[in-house]
Length: 205
Image (cartoon, rainbow, N blue to C red; front, side, top):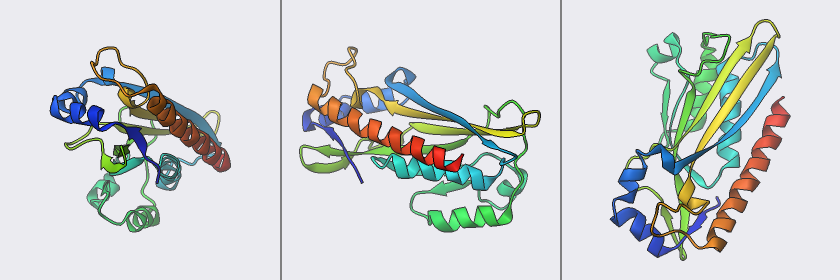
């Protein structure tokens, strides 16, 4: 597990000045990284969804999983298997969903209204102390979109990952920012995760 670096001063400011509560509902404090690609043939199924989820979780190891919501299907909902919380057994949940082989309805153009979603917190090192960024409910999320193109006979995916700007770059709207060497360290961790993610997606293609 890797940890992003912050100072205690910055973290106290983030928590005590209600910045946390304000910025978790303000999308201007987010930036988005996107991965896109495709697989040969019809791979519009939950096994493929979990491949993409696994690639994300294993690559971005400075994020703490909060919960996952899978793209909707009627049978998945009936079995009460659409959601996963971090305290429950991920491997058992994944195996159960794949075993049932639920059908995902295809939108042909990409179901941008109902992706699979992953919500998470951030592992931090605040001057030697291991902490999480959020004390309250967080909205940072990754959306995984999957659809099958009948004409080209390919399955397409798009993965949109949200990050807190202030952990990786200067934000002039804020009175306190992280030191430049901390921002560089955090950016390098994110870049390493991106490389891992690309390698895993290439292996699946």
